[in-house]
Every structure is written in structure tokens, then in C-alpha cells.
Amino acid sequence: MTNTPAPSQDFNIVVVGQQGRLAYEALLFAASLRHSSPDFRGRLFVAEPQPGPLWPNDPHIKSDDIRAALSDLGAEIIPFQSEHFGASYPYGNKIEMLCALPKGEPFVFFDTDTLITGDISQVPFDFNRPTASLRRTNTWPVPQLYGPQYTGLWKSLYDMFGLDFESSLDLSQPDEFWQRYLYFNAGFFFYRCPHEFGDKFLEYALAIRDTPPVELCAQSFDPWLDQIALPLVIHALGGGRDTLPEGFLDGSVSCHYRFLPLLYARENQSAVDILEAVAAPNKLKKVLKGYDPIKRMVYQGRGRKARALFDQDNLPRKEQAIRNRLKSNGYWMR
Image 1 (cartoon, rainbow, N blue to C red):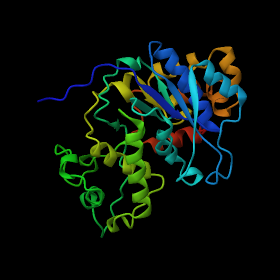
Image 2 (tube, rainbow, N blue to C red):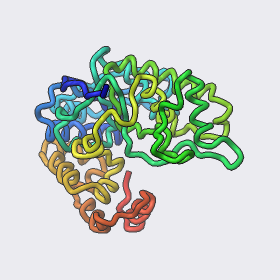
Image 3 (cartoon, one colour):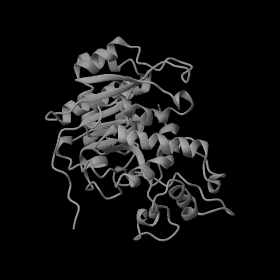
Image 4 (tube, one colour):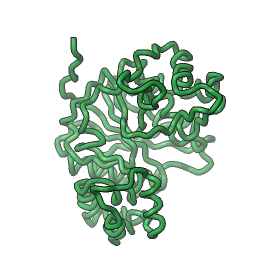
């Protein structure tokens, strides 16, 4: 019996927005969604952390112009409280905000530093079988010379939560090679219910942070905690690495660019064209110019000059080499 994707259905999209860079990125995300997916029928949420003891500085979006622009693009700003992470681990926003979404309604989460570049309503999501971005590198764990290697490190986590480790492995990859083990970038993920996903995500992340297995004593959890817990959540909920056909997300439909200089340096020309098209309307331009990297890279043409430093058919293999070239030529901004 083969697993087939669920039929096309309405779903919600959510990003996290807060004061500063993320607010402007959320605006670009919303504009790109409306531009590239005019037939999208779901709701677009911008989840906003609220002031509280875990935020020394007020994280909510203070600009009335940004809030109005998001509303004009059909985005709904929804508040959530930071009870476990906050400023000490802002990546925890993507965990804690899930409880603010409508219960029982399928959702797709995206990092704000993403552009929608195609029709997202045509992506064959199977919301019963979650997955996340496979556009990742071997950032975690880092096996130590005299400690457990990949198998021992990952298995300790599966054992901690009573999960079957063997069924998570990609047996086409060699033993002790990082891609054999379930690992994602948390730039997107989806499921049929945000509360069900969020409860397990929070449970696993807090347990790993507060009472990790002894095998992980030499491992760093910052900033990787969300990406350590995520594969365990996906595996526990019946998902995996192969539940979404290749070529849609992180492909023709979405572009996780991370920083604008990297977008110009390494992403395909269609992503650059969409960025500049959605940022062009004067009403939006007046707001987006408030963020210096957008002002300089997009409106003052520095992005195109940065792009000219690279042969798109022969990019450096490592991201750090791209960053170094951008920095040495004065084009690095974040």
C-alpha cells in the first residue's frame, strides 16, 4: 500500500513578526504571497510575541505603517505570550506561537526570510504526514573525538521520548554519515493541527533543554534547539523526509533566502525579480525604505552589484565563502 498526498485543501500560513528585521521581512513575505499565489484561499497570520518578563525590550511591531501595510495585504496579526523562551532563545517563537493558531486547521509555517515564488495552492501537502525543509547542512550534532558519534547521539533522543530510532534512518546513506539521520532546517514545517504539533514541539524542546540525555553533555543547544526537537516531533506524528515531493518548497514555490545579500548572491533570477517586483509599489516602498538593508540592496541597486560578483553557474560550495566575498566588497548587511 502506498501513501498518497491528501487532496488539495484550504490551509493557513503563519510567519513570526516582531519589531525590527522580522517585521519588514514579514511584509515582503506577505507581498510575495499575494503576488505569486493570488488564488490562495487560506488565512495569512503574522504571529507577534507580546511584552513580558522574558523580553527585556518590547518585541511587538511598533510601526503603525507596517501594521497597516500588513493588513492591506490581507495578513492578520495575532498575539502570543512567551512563557518559556523569549529573548534568550528567540527561535522558540516558532514553537510557542503555534498555540495561537486556529485549532484543528491545517497550517504551514515559514521563516519570515522567505519569498513565495509560485502558486502555493498547487503544492501537494499531506497534512497528516508532516515534514520540514531539507535545505540544511550538518550543523548539529558535532560528534566529539572520545564521545558518542551520530548514532549514539541521535538514538539517545529517540530513546528519551520512546520513539523508534531505526525507522527514522535513511538506509541509503552510510552509517555515521549525517544525512542518514533525520534532520531538517526549521525554515518551514506543516501539519494538520498547530496545537497538536505545538504541544509536542514544546514538550520535546523543553525536555531537551532542561534534562538532556547524558550522551549530549558536550553538545550545544543554542541556536539549534528547535532543529534538534523538530525531527523527533515529525517522526512521532507519522511524518518523515519524503512526505512532500521535491521541487515545490525550497524550489519553484518558495525561496528561503536568509539575508538579502545572500538572496542576490546565490538565488535564481526569478527570486530576485519577484523581490524587486513586490517591493516596487510606491505605497509599500515608503514603508520598506525604513529598513536599511532593503533600502540599500533593493532600492539603491547594491543588490544587483553584489550579484555581479558571482557566477551563478559556479557558486562557491560553502556559504561562508559567499559571505566573505560579500563582506570584502562591502555588500554584507543583515
